[in-house]
Length: 102
Image (cartoon, rainbow, N blue to C red; front, side, top):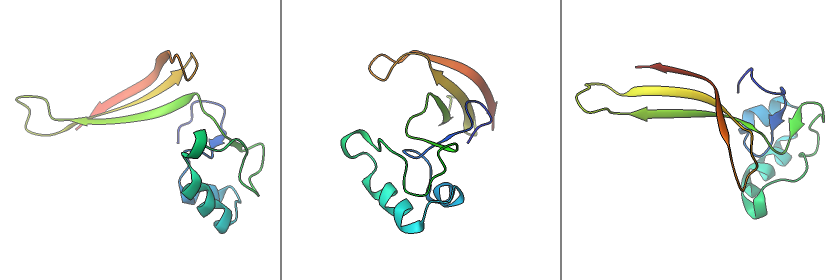
């Protein structure tokens, strides 16, 4: 989750605990998790999700990357918040923020 963006939670990417926190019944939340990825994902919010808190698509994403650069003894982690300013078939990503650490 990030403080960037609209403040809405994408039901196609939210974990179980977030769906439950939004008020989605556990059975509906588990069905949502089980059916994700089928035919492009959800096109409507799970039963019980307050419409002002949920969404079925996002344009802002968090990317966590961990790598082992040559000559470095420990892994390097980079976390970026990116926004897709294009569309799904022609994405155009803009880095909103990033941080690196060990």
